[in-house]
Image (cartoon, rainbow, N blue to C red):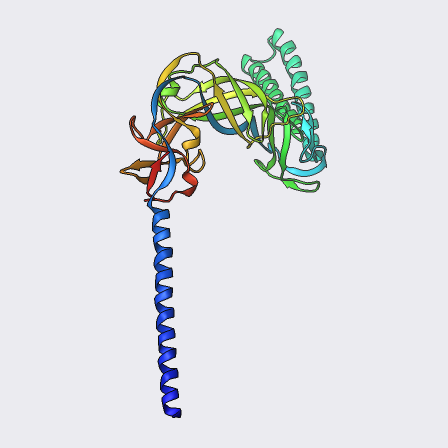
Length: 350
């Protein structure tokens, strides 16, 4: 009797397990069907690149550089006695920066002065003797030569003494210093890096089509990327005659730094070249761009399948971007709904 009961229970358990498996299979199939329905097509808004007119204005980016940069080198030798200007100090041309010990050079200067004065006295005496024909013309010429030689030595001695008082050749700010009181200088020892940021240069790169639209002397609106609300006016000072390896032309723009020197060398800047002329361009709504404007891409729809495609953009106008490479008129591009898309997603137009 117990055996029969065990058999009945076993059959019941097997049936329960089988039922559960079938039920799970149906549930999984239902979920898969729902997922398949969901993945069948994602509703998106479609647009097309269209030919339009935009002005020829364009922007270009670069780095601000000092209008003058100087690595000041020593023109004398000796021990530094005094340092008057240090890193971060603003200097004017002619300001005294440091003083080098000059005892030996002052002694040389005194000797050269004495030799010059003696040579002048000798020449005066020889000229009196020559008037009475008491000396030869050769002796007189040698006396005159001695004056010139001693005068040259005196000038050189004065210059050596003057070079022990080292002054700034330009206006600017000391960006770095390499010496200290007690340092011993040799000839061509590096002393300071001095940069003049009262005026700055912004060097930007433009392509072959853009370089033909600008000329020296053009006024350009300039902004620093760190403070795009502040605008400065620059002037085109130089345009490269030859393109670089990337077929870009270097354009140098010079501008005046505000009184507080708020612009710093090394900052990123943007130059806006404003032009009144118009040109043809392939335009696309800006919202169609996937990712950043530095690495732009769009979803192109082919046979109801979304394909991610890299493009190159040109001028950015209000609400639209110029497509320089990667698209043609008539292509279907996703304008909105990209957030739900992946490469190969099925789509349907709203």
